Length: 65
Figure 1: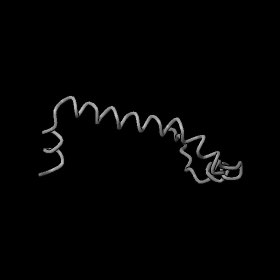
Figure 2: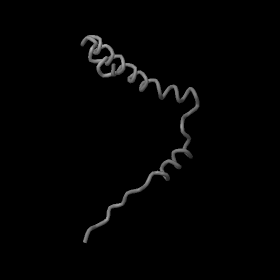
Figure 3: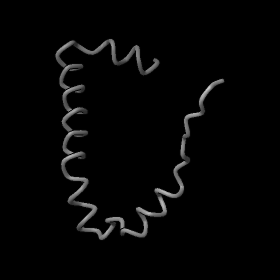
Figure 4: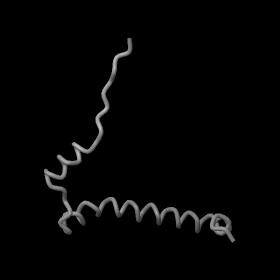
């Protein structure tokens, strides 16, 4: 049975709880990710930020004739 068919076979309340759980998990990850990066020492240095700025392509506007 395909995943979508199995999902649709669940009751509406169960699907609501699954969706709310996924959104809560994602929200928790967004709140905790910055603190986890600091704790693990993965905060970018100023040199890393400068190299990233240089790696991003620049877009220039060209006037039409």
